[in-house]
Amino acid sequence: MPFSVNSPILFIMVGLLICVVLAQSIYFLVRAVRRAKEIGIDKSTVKKTISSAAVFTIAPAVAILVGVVALSKSLGVALPWLRLSIIGSITYETVAANNALQALGLAAGEKITDASVFVTVIWVMTLGIAVGLILVPFVTKKIQGGMSKIGMKDKKWGEIFNNAMFLGMISAFLGYVFCDVGLVFKGDTSGLIPVCVMATSAVVMAICGLLSKKCKIRWIEDYALPLSLVVGMASAIPYTNWLG
Image 1 (cartoon, rainbow, N blue to C red):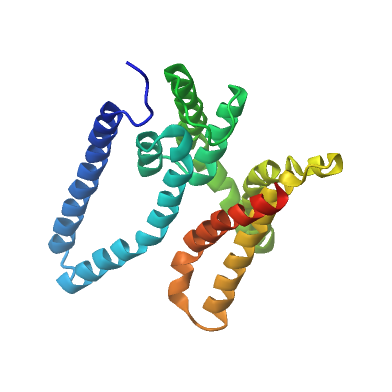
Image 2 (cartoon, rainbow, N blue to C red):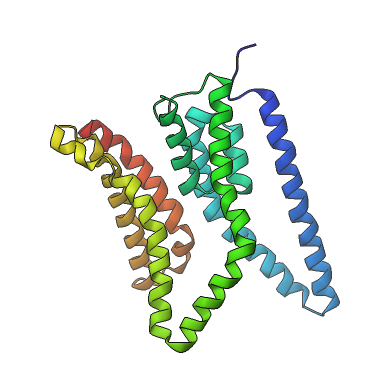
C-alpha cells in the first residue's frame, strides 16, 4: 500500500488527539464557570468574558490556518493540523520542517511520498519543540526571578534586558531570512525573496500600528499578526515571479 501524507488513518489519529484537547478545554471552562458562580461573580460578567475570549481567538486562529496551508503541500493536512492545534508555532514548525526536508535532499514544499522521510520530519519537529517543555519547569522560575531583581534595582535596565531577550529570539529567525542573500553576488536573486516578504509583512504591521494609535482603530491590533502573515505570503508570489 503506497504511503500518503493525507491517509485517512492519520486524520483519525489526529482527530482523536484534538478531541482530547477540546475535552480538556471544555472541562476547565465548566469548572471556571462553576467557580465564578461560587464566589459570586455576576453572570453577565462571566458571559462577557467568555464571548470576548472567543472573539480574540479568531485572530491567532487565522495565523494558524495560514501555517497549516503553508505546510500542507509537503506534510499533508493532518500533521500540520495536529502540530499547530496543540503545541506548535508557525514560526518554528515551518523552519523545522523545511530544514528537515532539505537535509533529506528534498526541496521545501515538495510532497513527501516516503513514510521514512515523513517520520523523520515528525521527529525533528517534535524533539526540537520538546526542549522548551523540558526546560520550562527547571529554568523559568530562576530566569523570572533574576529579571525581577534587575527590574527592581533599575527599571530602565530591566526593560533593556527584556527587549534584548526578545530581539535575541527574533534574530534566530532573521538568520533564516538572510542566509541566502549572498547568492546575489553569484547572479541569483532568489535569495532576496524572503527579505522582500519580511519587509512587506513589516510594512503591513507598521500600518496596523499607525491605524491603531493615530486613527484609534483598536480592534485592528488583534488582527495585525494574521494580516501581516497573509499579505506577506501573498506577496511571495509576485516576488518569486520577479526575482526567480
